[in-house]
Amino acid sequence: MFDAQKTANEIITFIRDFYEKNNIKGVVIGISGGKDSAVVAGLFTKALGKENVTGIWMPCHSREEDKMNALELANHFGFELKEFDLTNIYDNYVEQIIALNNPDINDLVDSNINLKPRLRTATLYYHAAYLSKKNKGLYLVAGTSNKCEIYVGYFTKGGDNIADIQLLADLTVDEVIQVGEAIGVPYHIVHKTPDDGLSGLSDEDKLGVKYRDIADVIENDGKNTDEKAKQRIYTLHERNAHKFSTPTFRKK
Image (cartoon, rainbow, N blue to C red):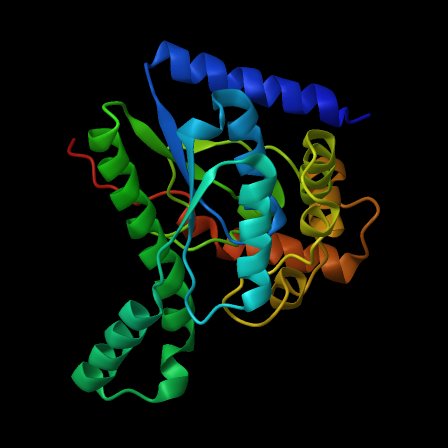
């Protein structure tokens, strides 16, 4: 049986040991207003102290609700939250792409969705480098993807898959929620319907499957999942295999 408090304590110890061993100072976390980034921020704050945690809220045609959740989370755990608005940067980027290619707008949908996490990743690494110089100690960028998202490839290459340290990559969505409850993440944030904050759809709507079914496939080979959902999950996993490795020529 999953012990959320024990797991939370183990993650906190993992952070402290890694930071001490490698003489690292702080962390930069993209705060979305959702549960994954909330749990990561809470764990880092407990491990390093609020003074060594910087959250970045990066709106890009984003919802006011998400901003309010991000602010509430920062106030709850006491870490600094910076706002870096990407809306104009994103709009200017897309305008130049349209001027350069004169595309059918429908052909840009996937590119536009993936552009947002790539801009956010660049922003996080910029701030990490800046804070490392300013505070005379290395700052890492924390990842916020969970095990279910990673298994089906629900992330953007060159975007939210890039991080220096991962805390949730071996936790299913339900386990992330339980850890969040154990460390005191506000209830309505840790139980918020997961979505990317970009497309207007929930994660499960976009994926076409439930997170509990993904977890069942990972942990029980889908014993409790109907065949249609199970095949959909396996298809997503296989279709996104290209995200996990880069074909590399090796000389003989």
